[in-house]
Length: 384
Ligand SMILES: Nc1nc2c(c(=O)[nH]1)N[C@H]1C(S)=C(S)[C@@H](COP(=O)(O)O)O[C@H]1N2
Ligand SMILES: [Mo]
Image (cartoon, rainbow, N blue to C red; front, side):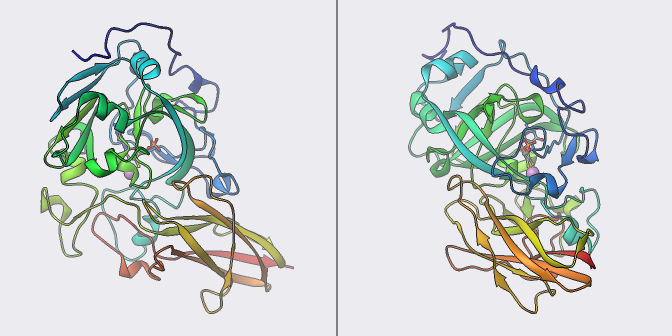
């Protein structure tokens, strides 16, 4: 038993807020639902545009199994593995025994904008996410680093693994969701055990009562409904760490590849998207406001965004908005003058290392369809 267990006080109630908006999981009615079960949905790009922080009812939802409805009073977090003291923490332990921290961070699914890769070649069994598998929230909770310190995590241990109760039949074999991150990231202070999202108790769809948020890493590492934190020498052997969420060589068959093949994804690759106008929209000719996001993972930041109104022949620099935190996307906007007729609007970004996004989806296509960070192109028709 941990030194933090057994403490009692009033906690907030979790999971009651999501019936006030449309849909079973509290999402707006115009979400693009890729799957009802497991629930996978992204907002229309217009709903993300111009909002530094995404409303909870608009935030994308990515699930590999059924969304569990956990009893917050019964919930416990077990901290074990290479630690001096195993801990078993209740929700009130997290609230009362640890400093509460808040930060704004963007979550982005590694499958964000897979739709662009599908135009190159089919990717069977994976959802055609657009650029809306990216959203930003203010997250409040406890630093994982503080909990690791309380447990006396051994300095030599290189990884911290997270486990959850939602069982995915998409895994082979079927298993609960899990992942891991390097100890250096786990100790960094920005990785949170989150209890609240945009100032409200975390809703069920986003991991109530407690989820991990790993700023700057692919969304898959931010385990929802977390109930186990294990300090260990090796990365997690969970299917979603060892087999899925890996960048496979182009000629690899993902159905037979097995664990350990290809590149394990962690920090988010530099990417950007046009959010407004919407792809396919009719717009007035003359000046039109164009806006979107750019995002650079982990220790990099977005340094420059270029926008083209002619398919990439000529470019202008977009105006960058203030970044809410080092872990948030960078919103940008620009005013383009469009001639009457069809136009291809393209966006591309540079990060603080001087790296530019790759131009074409052909260059980044991979068998599972992750990390499509090629330049985002949309088509609009300007009318007189
Ligand atoms: N327990 C659990 N955690 C999970 C997942 C899941 O299916 N189960 N999906 C992951 C993936 S792939 C992403 S992109 C993010 C999405 O978080 P959101 O649904 O809050 O947007 O959660 C991650 N955490
Ligand atoms: Mo994801």
